[in-house]
Length: 80
Image (cartoon, rainbow, N blue to C red):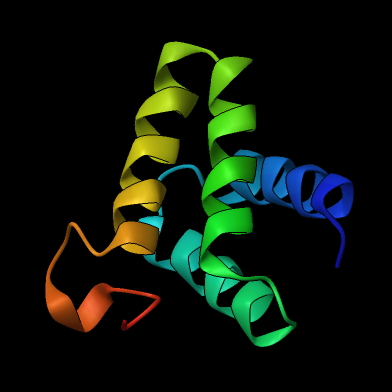
């Protein structure tokens, strides 16, 4: 999955599951399993955040926390 595709698919996922962070987290896990590394994922979330409304920005900040591990250790996506 390339960066553009990730951003497009994540945007759709957020529209469909904006009240379900764990479903959105599962999308991030699938992206990781398809080869996306931590830095790329974080950079893409940051890009999307830059052009989002405040509600979507809050969701993206929560997803970024899952990526960097600023969350319950059991919810962290990358264990490094």
